[in-house]
Amino acid sequence: MSEHNVDQYRITDEPYYMPVTNEVELYEAAYDARMPIMLKGPTGCGKSRFVEHMAYKLGKPLITVACNEDMTASDLVGRFLLDANGTRWQDGPLTIAARIGAICYLDEVVEARQDTTVVIHPLTDHRRVLPLEKKGELVEAHPDFQIVISYNPGYQNLMKDLKQSTKQRFGALDFDYPDAEVEATIVAHETGVDKETADKLVQIAQRARNLKGHGLDEGISTRLLVYAGQLIAKGVEPNAACSMTLVRPITDDPDMRDTLDAAVNTFF
Ligand SMILES: Nc1ncnc2c1ncn2[C@@H]1O[C@H](COP(=O)(O)OP(=O)(O)O)[C@@H](O)[C@H]1O
Ligand SMILES: [Mg+2]
Image (cartoon, rainbow, N blue to C red):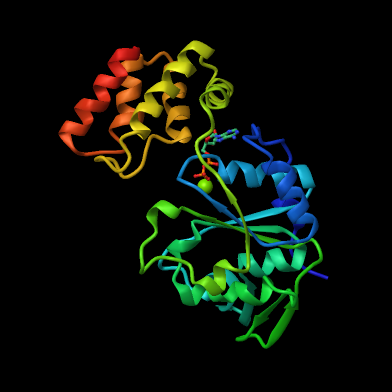
């Protein structure tokens, strides 16, 4: 019924994901109920990778939308375009997902304005519909459609938060940086550095994470540890690799940089 090519949204190679607790089982049960899901946690802790892994595991196409404050409802739902033959409707990513039965992942959804976020409401209750007001069409969501959003509670402020009427449409899974052992396994797997090096990187991150709220807005993420491992695996000297990936990105404060560099030096 739809002109969209479902295969382009399928994930063909299994994304590596190391479970932290029972999130895989919980997500499977939630998907079975087609429950909208919110993934909460700091940046770079595995939320996107988890969704990619679950879409692969469930054999469903995945459409990811990186949300930002300039995004309008039309960017999600679709718009009329002018071309040589006149006007033509173009479905937005949310509409495509609803039509083809994809998992629609709205990444960093708080970045979007609230009037944008409300377009997902009719898809997240028993109606499972998406009104295309400009087109005059009511899209009934495909039975496989599910909506997943990610949300970083750390960035929460009064201007940028989801309304309760949005929040209370979702089941939520908390994500955080994995335990040291799991995180080191991930870093070693993702980069090819040995376990001993991965352990050191994780210990550096754990020190920095203790500084969150004491001069650091956010700790060193798993993503940054993967970056550090990638450089080390390419032969970059570990102190230089850590400075570039674990210290420089997260703070401009000279004292904080010294503190973090010193932590790096105790391990490498
Ligand atoms: N549990 C995990 N299993 C496998 N890789 C992980 C896991 N957690 C984090 N990672 C690694 O960290 C990187 C960043 O994770 P990502 O999913 O992009 O973070 P988020 O979406 O939370 O910002 C991933 O590309 C992956 O290399
Ligand atoms: Mg992400």
